[in-house]
Image (cartoon, rainbow, N blue to C red; front, side, top):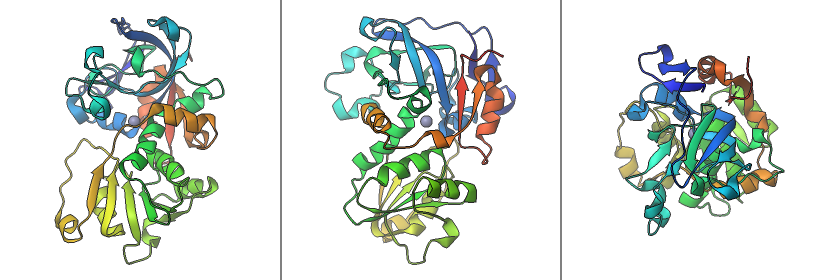
Length: 324
Ligand SMILES: [Zn+2]
């Protein structure tokens, strides 16, 4: 089958394979034919060596179950990306996504969705409601990560919150936070994206236009830039909270004294509840289609990766069903 592979010996760290062996589901898994997949910043970092991953990347997708669990056969599904063995389900509860024995779809120890097919545990796969299109459902995973921000840092009414970064993830996080009774500002560096935020009804401004005096109670760092935490610490008030959402291949080096001096709470936040994300999409409460910059056939995946690194683009989708 056609698949994109993270391969450090290829230019850009990514290459197309035309004869990659199709996966076979193990007991408890389903075989999914990918309908649409999204490239996220984590994928770009994987191509730069993040996690030392080899194989097929891709963890944002919607697909159709071809075989495996009977009740899912023929259904459109998305997937929670942290995969754990069924016998380990009991007892892990909240720590499920931190099981040391887990694999992570397209990120650690398991091939992902930038291929014609993938396998995933049936237990990870919520069914997509019929009213949610493929172009919406492909955002379920990053939208779930956005929903998780509120679970990790519930906002109090009237709090002043900033989303730092007006990229793919930042705009999703901002739309989720904007539904809370807080005062929300998206702080970005890219004027086109700030314009898009405003068109989506979000309050947004350039980093250089943030009023002095560290005006925010909570800053959610979604910039994807290694200096994001430093910027966030410049924006948050003393005893405020910084929520970190970005991951990068490189190690950030910075002075952490401000965290101590200003008694800042720093909270890491990763994957979130897929069902809640699908509900938001089904209810039309979050707009995702304006984030789609282009759809590439999977066969042009290398080109799609290059486009995803261009700040002129937001979400780039891969469609393995288009044959050119
Ligand atoms: Zn992602």
